[in-house]
Length: 406
Image (cartoon, rainbow, N blue to C red):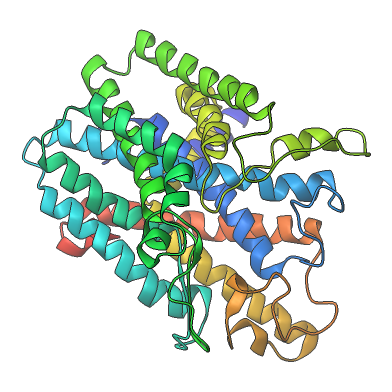
C-alpha cells in the first residue's frame, strides 16, 4: 500500500514532462521557492496586523521579523535569475532577438501599470495613486540589458558592470539628488510630487539592472563551463564569499543607510545587524540576499524530490503565479473583511497598501495575527499550485504568441 501511495504522489505532483530537457531544474526550484516566500509577504500586506512594523527591532517579535525579513530574498533572486535565464536562453537560441527581450521588458512595465495596478494591488481605476514596483524595475532592466547586449560585450564584462552598479549606485544617487531622472534611475521616492497625485518609485532602474546584469554574467559562466561539479563548487564558494563579505562590510556600520545597533533584548542585536535597506537595495542588502540564494540554487537538487517537483511547477510560470496570487490574496482580504465587519471599502478605495502601513479607513481591529496569515498563505499556494501546473502544461502544448509574455 505504501508503494502505491508513493507512485500516486509522484504521478500527481510531477511537473510537466514536456518541458525542455536542457532547462536547469535548479533555477526553476529556486525561482519557485522565492515565489512561495513572496506570497507570504503579500498575504501579510493585505491581511496582517500592521500596528507594529515587522522590522522594527524595538517592538517586533522574532517570528514577525522573519516573516518579513525572509521575503527580502525574493526580489533580488527573481531579478538575478531573470538575467541568468536570458544568458542561458541566448546560448540555446543563437538567433535570440534583442528586440523581443526589450519588448518583453516594456510589456512588464505596461502590465504593472494596467492589469496589476487596477485588478491586483488597488482594485480601482484611480490613477492618482501609482507605484513602480518589481515588474517596473525588472522590465526596464530587461530593456537596458537588451541595449547592452546589442553592443556585443562578453558575458563576464556585463557581469562585472552589474556588480559595479550594485556596489556604487547609492553613491551615484547622491550626485543626482532631487532630480526626477535620479528618482527613476537610482532613488526610491515620489516622482513629480504634486498635490492629489502620487507616483512612487519603489524599484529604481539602475540598481535592479545591476542585479540582472550580474545574473547574466553568472548565466554566461554556467553556459560556458556547464553546470558540472566544478561550476557548482565555484558558484557555491561565490555565494559563501558574498555572505561573508556582507558580514565584514556590515560590522563597521558605514555603508548601509539603515545602521545596526546593540539591542537590550537578547538576540535582537542580530536582527538589527541583518536589517538592511531594500528601497533602493543597498549593496549590503544585495550581498545578504544573493549570497545565500546562490548557495541555495547550487544545492537545490539535494532537496527531497517531492519538494523539488512542487517548486518546479511554480518556478516555470513565475509571472502567471505572481499576477494570480496578488489578485487571489486581495479577493480573500475583501471577502474576509466583509464577513468580519460587513464592509471592506478600505481595500479598494483610495491609495491601497503602498501609502500607509495601517491601511487608511480600516476599522479598529483589522489585521490578523501571524498564525492566521501563515494559514491563509499556505491556502493561497495550495489553491494556485494546480492552476499553475495546468497553465504550464497548456503553455508547452500550445504555440500562441501571447504565451511568451505570460
